[in-house]
Image 1 (cartoon, rainbow, N blue to C red):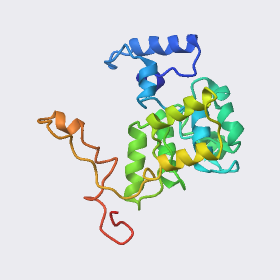
Image 2: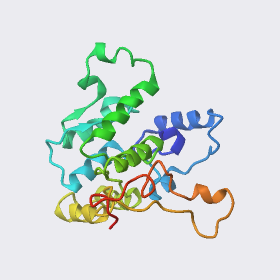
Image 3: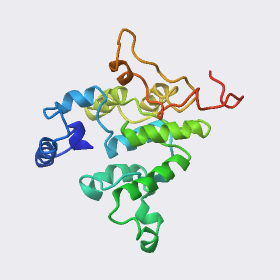
Image 4: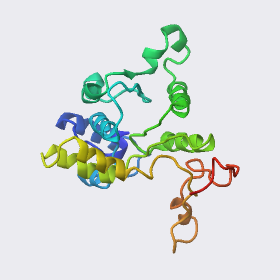
Amino acid sequence: MLAFTGCTYGLTDAESEELRVMRESTSHWKIKSINSTEQRVEGLCPLTPKEVGIFLKGLGYPESTVIYIAAGEIYGGDDRLLELKSRFPNLVFKETLAGEEELEGFTGHATKTAALDYIISVESDVFVPSHSGNMARAVEGHRRFLGHRRTITPDRKGLVKLFDKVERGQMKEGAKFSNLVKAMHQDRQGAPRRRKGPAQGIKGRARFRTEEAFYENPYPECICSSKEHKEP
């Protein structure tokens, strides 16, 4: 995912170069030259584990919160999770929840292990995607279909500005930071809303690329009207 998006924030020069080579050697990825800084400023990069920790703490989640990491191999290994774990020590994975025998049929099958992550993400109390990839959007749509379960979609473009202020010492993690994070995400928690249509002025097949995916938000066509699902 990092190689595809061209996002190298927080990585070493050697890691950034490894991802660049990976991207350029993958023929079906059409965009080869990517400015990582511009990607991040525009909110197009995944949140780093450290940023996820700062974000969740800003939302008010306590240190005791159990967090399931719905992902495959973490680039950089366990060391990359240290900043997140320092804020939320109760991190769990497939491997910590299931025994070796239970996972035996899944080993070496990326789609099967991804299916486990998908099921747990759909059934979780809260789902927070670090990046708006296809799986994250499918999970969001599924949770909407099941009753608009809480799904907090990070405003990555807005959050980057706050993260950078903290990094530069212009702001500290605390009440002011938390209030800004909460206000920014007041309307980004999975409440019912109509699917966004195509951008105005665009015709032909291009208009479908600007329309919100049906599997991301099936409202209102595939969600029956009821008091629980009334549009605000």
